[in-house]
Image: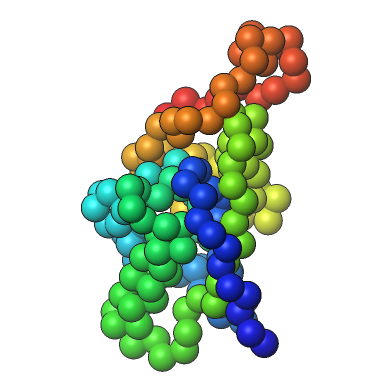
Length: 175
């Protein structure tokens, strides 16, 4: 099956999902998870992208990231997937593909959209029965072990009513 061509890149913040090859549960062993997390932060620290939120599930990853200057979303995802696959193959003598080809993405439109996707990321390990809360799941940005980037710049802010709680919202998570 042919992989669909990527559309023209629009700068901004994105929610990205990518699955493991054949949905194998590769990310249940801490050494493999550590490699993926280290790769995420290696490229974040090289300013390839800003990393706002993430969760590494047994067979997929969710990210909210903002690609850096002159870096497309496709290239940012390639850094994560290619870099982690190479390191997993070398460190663990793993010979099968790590990731499925391609990924899905959603352009984050505004602060409410951002909040909704952060909540989705944080609910993922809880809904899957991997932890009682996102803070207890070691491969989630909500656990407090990982320094993520601040709220993305350039998003339409919440309304005053949303900020004071008169509109049904969940407050922004403290970094």
